Length: 68
Length: 515
Image 1 (spheres, helix red, strand yellow):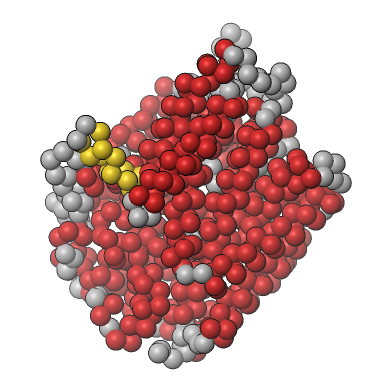
Image 2 (cartoon, chains in turn cyan, orange):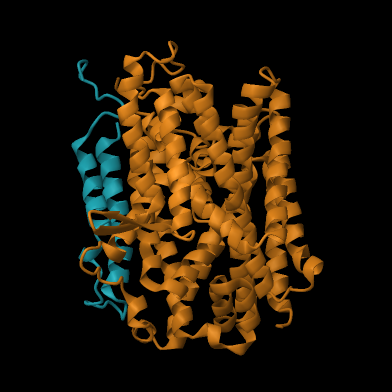
């Protein structure tokens, strides 16, 4: 950081979005329930499928915010 | 016994013929000198973002996954859905760790994880440990891909006495071996594009058509027994199914990128940016995998194993027959042919990449390190081509002569062994503080403890770790990785203080590690 340039692969605060992703997906009590249903699919299943999209979106955000 | 389904078989064979042609033709794609190992074994590192997406997708989400994940849902219920969090949390790892890995490997001409470890820690025995672990863990994985082909071939009605029954598998194997030999990594890269399109079509059609036939998602899930619908609530004094679910997802995610075939696909990307972009794009496959897992529940709701015409298939293949049986039951024959081709071709892509990765490992890290130190470039790539044949042939013999259960159990153990290379490979990207001998001792301790725990748990993935009367059932690979890391962290300062063989030369000095 001395020369004012970002160190390649240095730390970025945007990476905290990844931590959030881990915390939610690896905590089953959050989503291990049937209600509310969506199109007849229990919450356990549709919420985790929704996490896939959320995860991809967060990764894309990190990509654009950290890309040189 | 069921009869041969001619319509499905014709569609299946046509698609197979097409990808066979494609496999050979791809030798000319982005043409390079296939007598160079990095051209044959890494496609010349020329795959951009899109091709990498197909290649890594075809590599991570294998045919066996498409059979086994729904089969687990069919047999065990909600716990099978751990595959979804697993394939969510792999992408931050891909995003953070592997662009850096790619840059180091690109700069020094490394083509395997073992090359990297050799350069980073300057210890050939540690590099050998990484290479052997990769080889041993990959073999049963290839065998499982062939099991995937066996299941769909059986579903097409091609079953017979011992030799005739195995003939289709042998033919598929010969096709695979020939185009891998002649085209290297370019073959699975081009075939992956066809395979992925077929798989997406199959998954989307299955998720729309089958629930409609069964009366909607509501009816499907209402038909499930409650113990399969959700994870069981943990009782007092244990983390129960919650701990198992989370550690299975986390441990599998940590182990995944250490596998040689995954490393090969990642290193074949044309730039570190292509890898970062893919971390955001690859979850498309995770979503599809989640849809496919649901198919296991459809099969359960349709009571597919209760239908007499599929009894023989279930008897032969167990719950792995659930998906093929449901496809036969729900779709016209021509579409079943497409779906089975998707699974069959989906087996060839990772099997080809795995055999190439194993060949790279043997050639670079065993042959060149210990047998012939100065091969010519042509000799090197020739050895790799032969090894790719031997590896596949070994897997074929194994699948034909050993019970399927052995391949599944070896694959389970392979995951536990593979994760023990994490400190040297994945943490090695960030630091070379670790002492190589400490890493080696951590590795062997993890392997011995993991094998023992897996045997104690009757070769199931989770071990009921008990601390002070509290039970933590969890993925053995995850627990033994913690043990491995603890040993490395304790022994490294100890060995360094004794100044035990710390290599003077770092082969990778300019790559900005932290210490």
